[in-house]
Length: 284
Image (cartoon, rainbow, N blue to C red; front, side, top):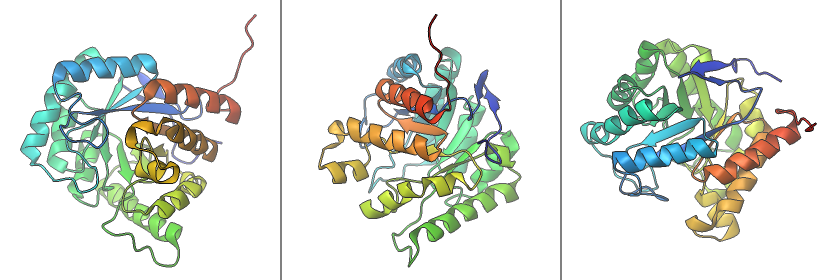
């Protein structure tokens, strides 16, 4: 069923029709210290090569991050983050046929990234760290991903209702800034301000999140929830990630954000067939 605000968007020549497939977002960290792949793609040539590889493997969206958001990360200056990401974004726009999102919660960085050619803002603080970022999205007429986050894990007696209230606050900030509902995407924030048990509960409420009426991006790739459940290090969480991706699609999520594009694009395609989002056609 098509939810309230999940109308197709055409961005950079790519139509995001959420009824037709679950879209794969490939992670491109141009940082020296990200928890999983820090330092691998922090020059333009390596970043472009990795983005092309991910597109060939099935990614329609490339998410560029210039500041690590791993637990205990240190904030870098706007200027340093802009210097890291703008040359990469400019090169991606010129060479890679994909929708480019910028993973930042900083208004100045978001503006510089969109002006450099990026198409979507992906904010891990749901426009609550720097509400001006919502005005950037409105002024430049681009979608914004509002991720659930907070500065503590005290959700009171009802985890889901408290988390939903946090997301509703983010939606209000976005709408008050002038962002249309069709440009709002939600992210449950797996791995952020949640214990492992709370991450699992958030996953179990994904259908309730989808029912809020906006497209939902699920970003579980290699997260600590998987490592804690399976007792595995970050480099051995592929199968656990696959399980969360397929579960999320069954719950109605519209996009997934992953490191391992080839494997997760295959899992996504299969899950889309099984839930009826894509139609399997017998070969003649």
